[in-house]
Image 1 (spheres, rainbow, N blue to C red):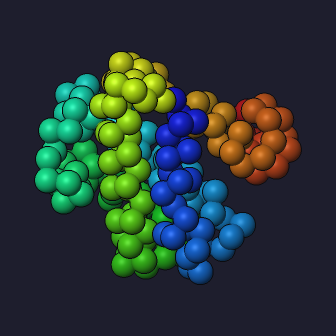
Image 2 (cartoon, rainbow, N blue to C red):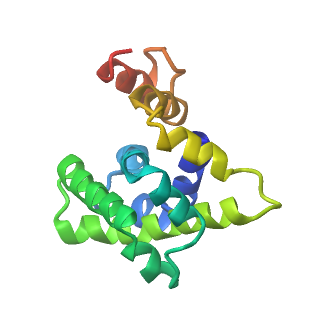
Image 3 (cartoon, rainbow, N blue to C red):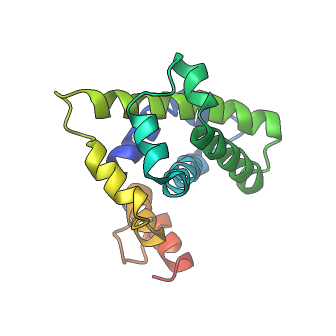
Length: 168
């Protein structure tokens, strides 16, 4: 499930991250991983009712309604802060990235979760993974390893380096 989430982030980050001169190309994946971490942390802290409310489309009102959701607002604030810290961006630049990526990613997640013909995301899998807190840094590290180079548990590439940072 985390691999599919990272795929959504990659799909919706082309303009905001990949083509953004404020994010060096060598750090594009790290910027995407920063947003993924904010989403996973937000889902873990949002609880079952927060997750199901979001995924069932209870926010309403399109992007504005989505961004008004308290759980999404917390995810956005965490992502903005992390982008500022990691990449030296000012708040306006970081908020611009988050406002371009986060609503599109979460909107696609909601759409895919509610589409009976799309089996890439299942509300049960999402709530099961995040509501009980079982998604941890090992899960994020393994996904990062796959997307950033190197195999999980190896010392190759940025993924191996992240593995080393997280105690692999």
